Length: 102
Image 1 (cartoon, one colour):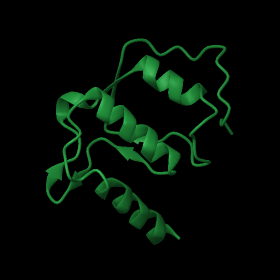
Image 2 (cartoon, rainbow, N blue to C red):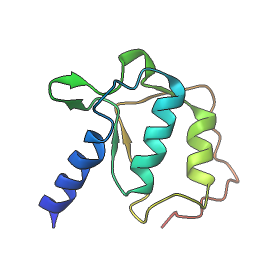
Image 3 (cartoon, rainbow, N blue to C red):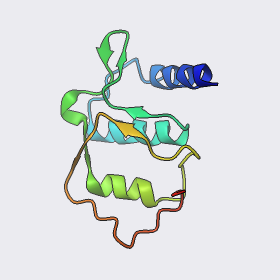
């Protein structure tokens, strides 16, 4: 089963391999897509030796992360898994309802 998960991650990332994710909007869309598919959104991933996400776009806002965590739509049962990101700004989850928290 682990092998299947690794293959899915590779296939999910390859769908974006034709161009580098070089804007905050593209990165946000890709993160949402990976999460919806139950994948880890790895902002340090490489495809064919190229970085998938430009280093300057590996920053995600606390507001964006809060919206992901508190949304009840588009979140796979595996939850929100993001690696290689730098969270900027405030992230206050006090009193927040996180629907997929187990």
